[in-house]
Image (cartoon, rainbow, N blue to C red; front, side):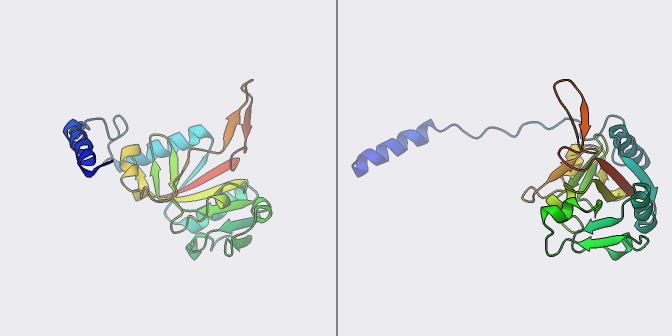
Length: 208
C-alpha cells in the first residue's frame, strides 16, 4: 500500500466517524423508594429487614466485640479465621481459636474452620447486600467462601439506601464480592439447598 492510498483510507475513516453520543440523562431514582440516604434510621431498618428476609441474623450494637462473640457462640463456633489487619477489639470478647489468614490458609484449613469474621467496603439496604473488595479487614475471597459461618461487621455509615449510592463508595479496579444473605440455591425441583456456593449461615453485626 502506498502512502497516498493509506492517507486516503484514513481520510475516509475520519470523515465517516460518528460524533460522540451525548451523555444520557440520569434522572433515575438513586435511593430505595421512600428511603432517602439522609434518613439514616430508615436506611438501617430497611437493611436489617432485607437481611432477615434472606435468613441472615442481624445484631445491632454500639461495640463490635460483644456482638461478635454472641454471634459466634449462638452458632457454636469454636474456631475462627480472620484477615490480616482485622481490629483486635472485634475478637476481644471471644475465647475460641483465632486463625489469622497469614500466610494464606489452604482450602483444607479454611474448610475445617467454623467461621470467618470480616468487615465490608459498603452495603446496600434495598437488597440487603454486603460488598467486599479485599480491603482492610476483608481479606481474600476464598476465606469468606469456605467456612460454614460468615460474621460481617458493618458500620452504619457504610450502608447506602440503594445500589447507586453504594457504587460511589467502591473502587471498580478492586475485586468486588456481593453477598446477599447466606449461600443457597435450588435445583429443577425447587428444593432449596444451603451452602453450595458459600457459607450456609450469615450474621451481620450492624454498628449504630
